[in-house]
Structure formats: structure tokens, C-alpha cells
Amino acid sequence: VNEATLFDALDAHVASFRDEPDDWEDVLRRARRSRRLPRRRILVALLAALAVLGAAPALAVLLLSRAPRLPDGADRSRVFAAIDPQSGRVLVQVAPWRGQDGICYLVPGVRAGCAHRTPRGTVLLSPPPTGFTFYRRIASARALLVGGGSRPVVFHRFGPPLDVAFFFPQRRHDVRALQLRDRQGRVVAQVSF
Amino acid sequence: MPDDLETLYRARLPEFRRVAAGIAGDRELGLDAVQEAFAAAVRKRRSYRGEGTLEAWVWRIVVNAARDARRRNATTLPDAPATNGHAPTLPLDLLTERQREIVFLHYYADLDYAAIAAALAISSGTVGATLNAARRTLRAALQEVGT
Image 1 (cartoon, chains in turn blue, purple):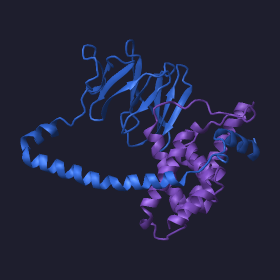
Image 2 (image 1 turned 90 degrees about the horizontal axis):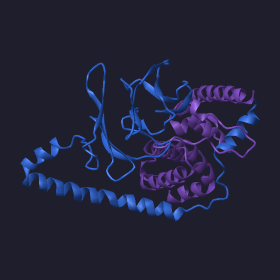
Image 3 (image 1 turned 120 degrees about the vertical axis):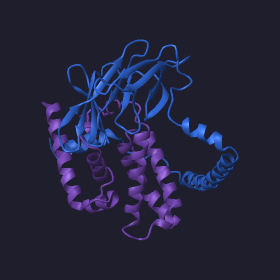
Image 4 (image 1 turned 60 degrees about the vertical axis):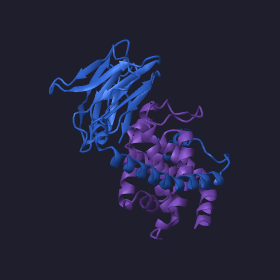
């Protein structure tokens, strides 16, 4: 494989943008729009400060309720959970999304939300590399470490009606990439951080 | 300065877009990332103090915008890369994020090691070593596909 082959492959990977028009006016519009944001933010902050002064007890409730909760769209009659076999803590709560083809989830301390199902949809939650996948081919996950080497990732597949798998690396700080693998251990996708 | 930015935008737009699309993993995300990056550059133009070239400063903003777009939208596994029917598909998922960025900046924008180093705020030596490692990985993978 020579440099030309490599160049051809890269050339095919992202086609050239040579024939596509530019739009400098759009750049200036976006710049102006973003400039206005701080004023709005200041206004919102002022209103919030006034509300806080006027309703201190409500603030306590507000602060307590900031922790992510299972979204309202979740079908609460069918909530499933995955539990860390070592610590016994709940890793995730998942439920069907009412009226939608998808799921609602709560990863305690990380994030809550709902997601539409797509055949190969994979979602990384912040902070990565926690996440989930609807892709049925994926059967396990492995974390690649900053210093080299790798380690398995807690991988939990929920059957119907959820039909989704969640993955939870046990320590996040030394993970540089996540590999999602099929039943034969072949890498289906790799996401770097 | 906005004039300089506009000149740079018009002169190098296809390269900015191609690199951003590569990093973001999606053509439309790449287009949008470049527009956002230049809007940010217009907004933050006073923070450019003339240390290094204007182009390197803008490249850094574009790379960051594309990186953010990729992370925000990492919701769908990328399909197999599109090919023109002749070239082999490129196993870029074997590379680290930093390797991919350097490969795109080098091949799509034709930046030399010093320019890439300035854009990514790393040393030229790191650029060279990373690019060589990426080439080795890609060649080995392409070789495997070809055999």
C-alpha cells in the first residue's frame, strides 16, 4: 500500500467541497446572533436572582430537584433497572417511552432523557463513555486505556420491550476510546475521546 | 480583521469544510461547524493577539467546533464510509481522535507539520510522530483489506 492508495482512500472518505457555494453573510448573521446572547443571559440571571430573593424556600426545593430524574415521558409501570453486581448500586433505570418508539432512561448522577429508536442508534452520555445502543449486533464493549491495554466494560442488554443495551466503564478517567463489539468479538465501532 | 477573516474564508473554505467534515464525521455537521467557527472568530477577533498566523488561529477554532459537533451528535454509528467504487474504504476508526485530526489537516488542507502544530497547539515533533503512526495503522489495515 503506497501513499497514492492512502490518498485515494482519504479522497473517497470525504468528497471535495470545491463546487459548493460559500456563505459569508451567514457567518456574519451567526456572529450577530451570538452577540445578543449575553444580554439575554444577563436578563435571565437578573430574573432568576429576583425570584431567588423572593422565594428562598422555593430555591431549596429547586436545588433538591436538580438531580436528574426519570423523564415524565417514561412508562412508569414498566421501569427496568441494571444493578452493578459489585457495588449493588443502580447503574440505570430504563422504561419504554410512552406513545413513542424509544426509551426513557436515568443514569443516576449522569443524565436522564428519552431517545427514539433507530436500528443502529448509539448514544454517548456525558461524561462519556457511558451510553447505550439500539444496534442488536453489538454484544459487548471494551474500554481502551490511555496507557495502552484495555479492559471489559459492564454491558447490560435489556430485552423486549426495551431492546437496548447500556454500557458503563467502571473508571472513566483513563479511558481513551470505547470499542463496541459483536458476538464474535469483532469491533463494530470505536469511539475515541 | 473581519476583512482578513473573510479573505481567509473565501480562499480556504473547501479545505476548512473538508477537514471539519472529516473530524465531525458528517458532511452537514462539517459545513455547520465551519460557519459557526468563523462566526466565533468574528466575535472573538479581539482575542487574536497576532501570536502565530491568523490562519492557525482560525484552524484551531474550526477543529474545536468540528470536534464539539462530533461529540454533540455522536448518536448514530457512522455508516461505512462512502467510496467512489474504486478506492478502498478507510478504517479511520482504528485511529485515535488526535491521529484522525492530523491526518485530515495534512491530507485535506495540505498543512505542513508546523501549521498543524500551530493549529492543534502541539509540537511539530508530535505531529510527525503521530502522522507516521497513523499512516502505519492505515496502511496495515488497507493491506489487510487488499489481501
